Length: 104
Image 1 (cartoon, rainbow, N blue to C red):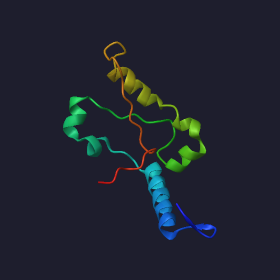
Image 2 (image 1 turned 60 degrees about the horizontal axis):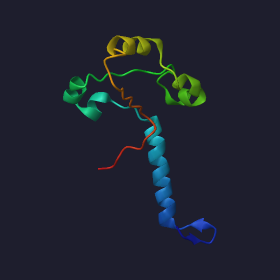
Image 3 (image 1 turned 60 degrees about the vertical axis):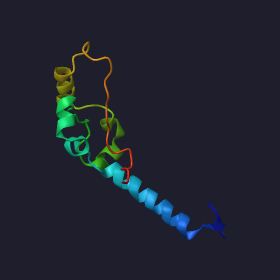
């Protein structure tokens, strides 16, 4: 990375700041199932959304991480209604807020 004295070079410092800002934005971003995958894909694969026990405000999730690790009651019911335990060989869960959006 190189250094100029005790500090990183300017271009490295700017790249680090950009990566940090992108990571912060990703953690606070909400994922919209239809805009990410498209209506046809969602319908074909019968995708549905569930929510954690933590309220939608991301800062509360950071302060109470246990609430973000478990599903709320309505989501548990939705899963039990929509997913037959013996019908699927595997299930895929997609979570938002932990990945930086890919640049095109």
